[in-house]
Length: 79
Image 1 (cartoon, one colour):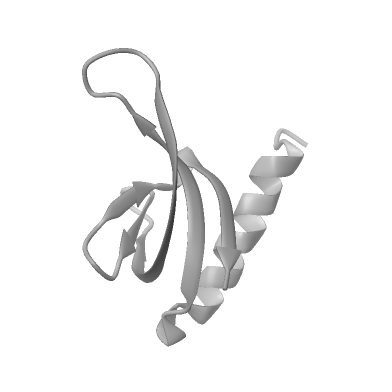
Image 2 (cartoon, rainbow, N blue to C red):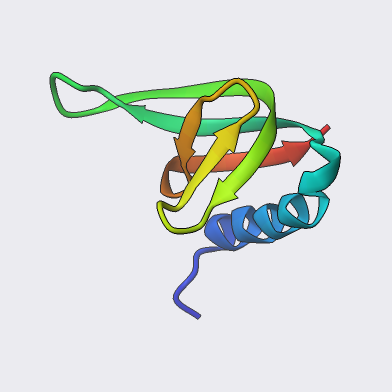
Protein backbone atom coordinates (compact mmCIF):
# COMPACT_ATOMS: atom_id res chain seq x y z
CA UNK A 1 0.00 0.00 0.00
CA UNK A 2 2.35 3.03 0.19
CA UNK A 3 0.14 4.90 2.68
CA UNK A 4 0.55 4.73 6.40
CA UNK A 5 -2.60 4.13 8.40
CA UNK A 6 -2.63 7.75 9.67
CA UNK A 7 -2.17 9.17 6.16
CA UNK A 8 -4.95 6.93 4.89
CA UNK A 9 -7.27 8.08 7.70
CA UNK A 10 -6.58 11.74 6.93
CA UNK A 11 -7.22 11.07 3.22
CA UNK A 12 -10.56 9.41 4.03
CA UNK A 13 -11.57 12.33 6.24
CA UNK A 14 -10.53 14.77 3.51
CA UNK A 15 -12.87 12.93 1.13
CA UNK A 16 -15.69 13.19 3.69
CA UNK A 17 -15.08 16.93 4.06
CA UNK A 18 -14.98 17.33 0.26
CA UNK A 19 -18.42 15.71 0.09
CA UNK A 20 -19.81 18.10 2.75
CA UNK A 21 -17.97 21.28 1.77
CA UNK A 22 -21.11 23.06 0.57
CA UNK A 23 -22.48 22.80 4.12
CA UNK A 24 -19.22 24.38 5.43
CA UNK A 25 -19.07 22.07 8.43
CA UNK A 26 -17.14 23.08 11.54
CA UNK A 27 -13.96 21.00 11.63
CA UNK A 28 -11.00 20.56 13.93
CA UNK A 29 -7.61 20.27 12.22
CA UNK A 30 -4.26 19.45 13.79
CA UNK A 31 -1.40 20.37 11.50
CA UNK A 32 2.32 21.06 11.47
CA UNK A 33 3.48 24.68 11.18
CA UNK A 34 7.12 24.83 10.00
CA UNK A 35 9.38 27.38 11.70
CA UNK A 36 10.30 30.06 9.16
CA UNK A 37 13.74 30.78 10.69
CA UNK A 38 15.07 27.34 11.60
CA UNK A 39 14.40 23.64 11.19
CA UNK A 40 11.45 22.21 13.06
CA UNK A 41 8.19 23.84 13.96
CA UNK A 42 5.11 23.16 16.04
CA UNK A 43 1.73 21.48 15.88
CA UNK A 44 -1.41 23.61 16.03
CA UNK A 45 -5.03 22.57 16.43
CA UNK A 46 -7.76 24.90 15.18
CA UNK A 47 -11.52 24.82 14.82
CA UNK A 48 -12.74 26.44 11.63
CA UNK A 49 -14.85 25.90 8.50
CA UNK A 50 -13.42 25.08 5.10
CA UNK A 51 -14.25 27.46 2.28
CA UNK A 52 -12.68 25.28 -0.42
CA UNK A 53 -10.04 22.69 -1.19
CA UNK A 54 -7.38 23.95 -3.60
CA UNK A 55 -6.38 20.72 -5.31
CA UNK A 56 -3.87 22.50 -7.56
CA UNK A 57 -1.88 23.85 -4.58
CA UNK A 58 -2.88 20.91 -2.33
CA UNK A 59 -4.24 23.22 0.40
CA UNK A 60 -7.36 23.70 2.47
CA UNK A 61 -8.63 27.27 2.37
CA UNK A 62 -10.51 28.18 5.53
CA UNK A 63 -13.49 30.54 5.76
CA UNK A 64 -11.25 33.20 7.41
CA UNK A 65 -8.63 32.97 4.63
CA UNK A 66 -6.15 30.71 6.47
CA UNK A 67 -4.43 28.32 4.07
CA UNK A 68 -3.23 24.90 5.34
CA UNK A 69 -1.08 22.52 3.31
CA UNK A 70 -2.81 19.14 3.13
CA UNK A 71 0.61 17.48 3.46
CA UNK A 72 1.04 19.09 6.91
CA UNK A 73 -2.30 17.83 8.32
CA UNK A 74 -1.98 15.26 11.07
CA UNK A 75 -5.67 14.92 11.99
CA UNK A 76 -9.06 16.16 10.76
CA UNK A 77 -12.35 15.76 12.63
CA UNK A 78 -15.79 16.94 11.49
CA UNK A 79 -17.50 18.43 14.55
